[in-house]
Length: 185
Image 1 (cartoon, rainbow, N blue to C red):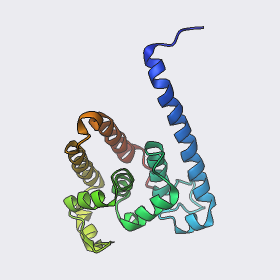
Image 2 (cartoon, one colour):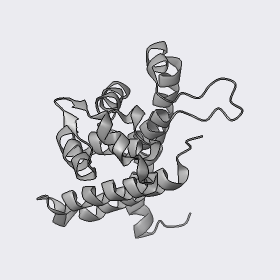
Image 3 (tube, helix red, strand yellow):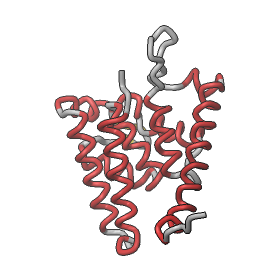
Image 4 (tube, rainbow, N blue to C red):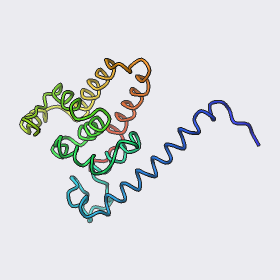
């Protein structure tokens, strides 16, 4: 039997956790599509007659977020955040980035970062007029601006010296997912 290298020993627990998170995410996605309460309220749910049956943006975002934040993500919480931030009215790519931020950093930080894009809130409700004003900008531009502000926010936190590399990797993975892998049609 071959000896494990030091790198293999270090990555084995991480790979096991990723595999468990993927299984949990798949189970959560399957449960969310089976539950009448969740599916009847799901935004952008693909119609049954669509040939590829592309999952909704929310389902795809939930799957990414669950893989990244397995301990803190659950369907009900994610749905509440999705609705609170008006993600259904946002460009799908930005909505996915917003959901991830809301779960990872909380509602207050997400609201602050959205204000950097010009998205305002009236009390607890998102100002849809401010969303409409952003329609001139491409989805990619909005996502990159939002993630840039998010990285800047991370850089000025107390844990930045020890966690910045991990946070940066997550943001880069999120950017890759949103700009390349997210299916919106």
